[in-house]
Length: 160
Length: 160
Image (cartoon, each protein chain N blue to C red):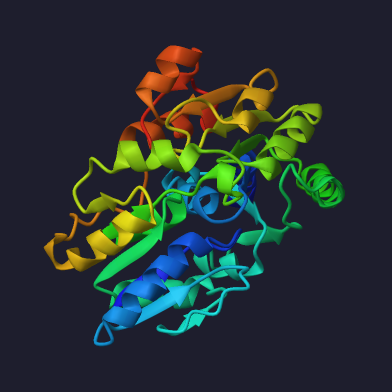
């Protein structure tokens, strides 16, 4: 019975795909880690060396690309699709940018609930990716109250 | 030790060059620069194109002050280690980034203690002269605000 109880518990802990591109996007995702405490997390990013930030965790690397390199973007999207299709997360969380856009689009096809946290770097208005993902994500958050007011997107604190 | 960093995605020669010129006039200043994918070869300070996260963290711990682009990775890392940071925003019109979000970031975050903003390369030299006046910011924790962590926890648990 003990075994089955622990299996049930494992079955109930949500699978989270936490995904971000490099630099500030990844640093912000790392600052959200306490929110993943009760989840089984797969971290996805663009630089293999970031593994040292999440030792012992499920960690995947995707090709780096921005919206200005269409071919690399396609490779990135394909790899993300593969990860989403095999991991089958219950929840997708992203701090941007392009990788988060794809993961949320694909995650939605697999019925994941999806959350986009717009980078704190977007202090003037929602980022372009944020605006594009808005109709598709279950939850979009900005880290600036005045951006929330102007855009109608929710503000619930920031990474700082 | 003054640590110069421009992130890993794009070069920021306008900043690196300005700091290198300042270093020529201050041979006693101990410097190290991470200059990104750049053709520039600074003559007056040791430099590298990229740093892995472990090395970057070590150099941030060792430095007395950071001089950086106004990227969130650089700013958040400086604050996490309680180091003062002098930032110069990248300009899209000069091909240094894709949009001008760093200008807004610098404006908003420049109000925080320990973060100093130089609008251009002339101001960088001026502010480098007065670096010793920059007081160290209070170390921030390495996690997001409790409000944001709780919001995200509720979303992941599906109780929001």
